[in-house]
Image 1 (cartoon, rainbow, N blue to C red):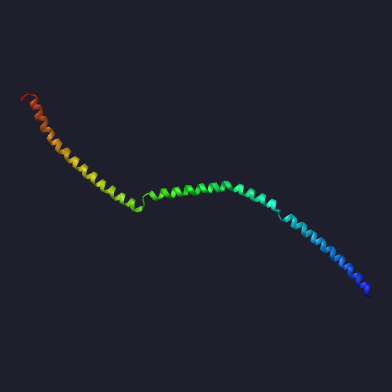
Image 2: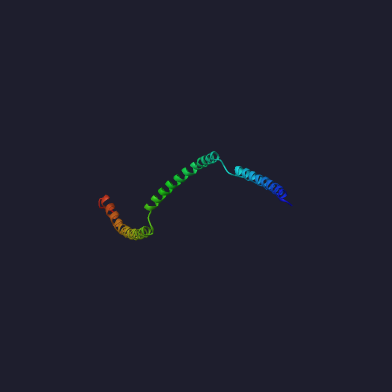
Length: 131
């Protein structure tokens, strides 16, 4: 083998390698172009995404506002200590009501004892002292 044969073989190999590299490069470029997104497509998708989330953002803000109002209302509600104090006061009022009931029962007995003689006196005076 002499030099021109090697050159001829080298050129044919280089030609085949170049064709393969060109084909592989073309396939890679085609894949990249179909896989990647253009700026306009990406911008349109972002705008669509932002539009879709406007309602969610509004609902989130409304929910936060309602939650803040609920927390403000909860601060005004009585706590465990306040409920215990109210229970004690209600117990004291209950005891006072029972004592008042006993006093009224006692007054009822007194009125019944006074009522009978008073009725007899009224009847006596109405009859002019006659029986």
